[in-house]
Image (cartoon, rainbow, N blue to C red; front, side, top):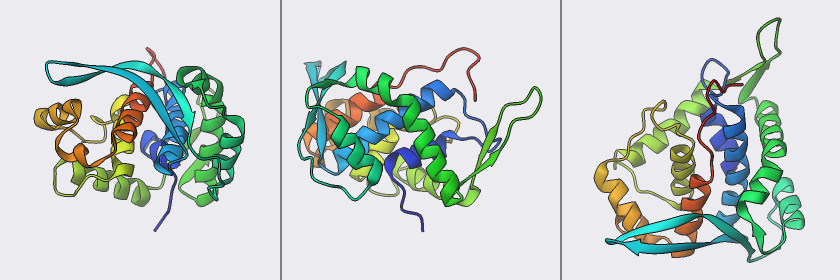
Amino acid sequence: MWHLSLPEEFLLLAHQESGRVRDSEQVAYGCAAAELGELALRRRLRVRVRKSELFGFEVYRLSGTIELLDVGRTGLGWADDLLDALQSGSGMHKWLRHRRRAALTLHRDALIELGLLRHRPGRFLAGERHHPDPSARGSLIARLRAVYDQRAPLDERLLFLSDLVDGAGLAGELGLRLSWQQRKDRARGVGAVLAFAEDLRDTSTVLGGAIPSPRSGGGG
């Protein structure tokens, strides 16, 4: 069984069986957002957000400020490097723009080293490909699908991963769909998400929302 960090899980899902991603820039933002998500899951940071309530629904301003909670070592080299580089009070969007390309390269290389992405160099008129391991990717999709179909409980990690997948617009191509009631419960902060601390839930929501829409004709 593979023990992957949140950005590695997101990146594995973002790679299609063809070895391509729909939009490399969008996936890079998703990787950087997932890095912050991993640190949030480890209680090293949170994203402070502004939100209001409208007709019982939580309405977020999709910006935020990174607040460091604990700079103690995590045991993950890249995560410890991030904690050294981050400053409490950093703007989330500015950080994601700064970090996105380095995050994509770092975690793609990690998956290649683990054998979960197979790199195929580019040829004339064809870009390079990174083919995901079908077993690992399929297992991860199955875990998410069980949560979406309400056959398995939602945990903190799957909350973050599902928000990232939704934010990147990957849910449809992965065969994942939240029901209207599930979306309504999440927007109200009730149901399956009620068990999670509010600041953790807020952080997951704004990180997923910070991933930009795919560019027209994007790929990579």
